[in-house]
Length: 187
Image 1: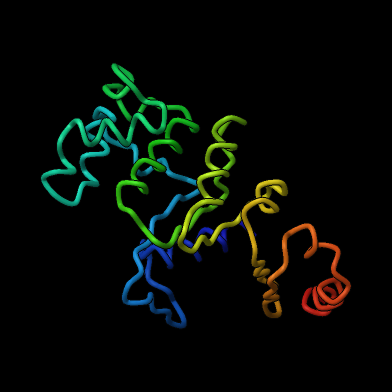
Image 2: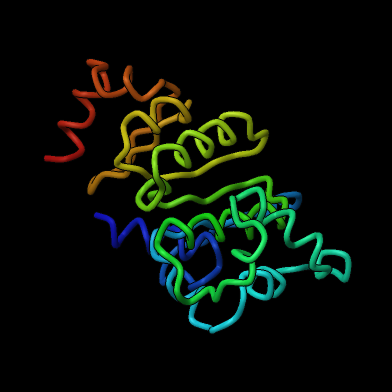
């Protein structure tokens, strides 16, 4: 269920500690997290420039011109970058979160239901940038077209184990071996 997926992402992004088991990130990995529920990131009444500045890693990244370049890539230009972050729509918040992630230059992306608040144009641009991303992407989605275009490995978590397959999504959902395994793991 979606609550379990949220908890998995919260563990992997170090927001919460696991109650059982362990995991270790590789020494050269850095991750960016796009949660499905991002409201807690926008609870201050500050401008988008100041909002993104709080995620800066050094003095160069704190410069307004540098920050505005990341906001501009997500279609926040001119006075829009001075808008208060706590009055944004869901799609605008998602675009801000993408700016935050890009600024961190991660090589692993954790993305939970990324298309929920984006319009078609934003989904297409996001989709294309993920296809060109050179790192690892771990994502969950209910958007079949998005899954088909981005995923090259499917890991399905079931109540009785996992299914791990290097198939495109459309092949995965009709594969006889997968269907048989799924039947066993869900019974």
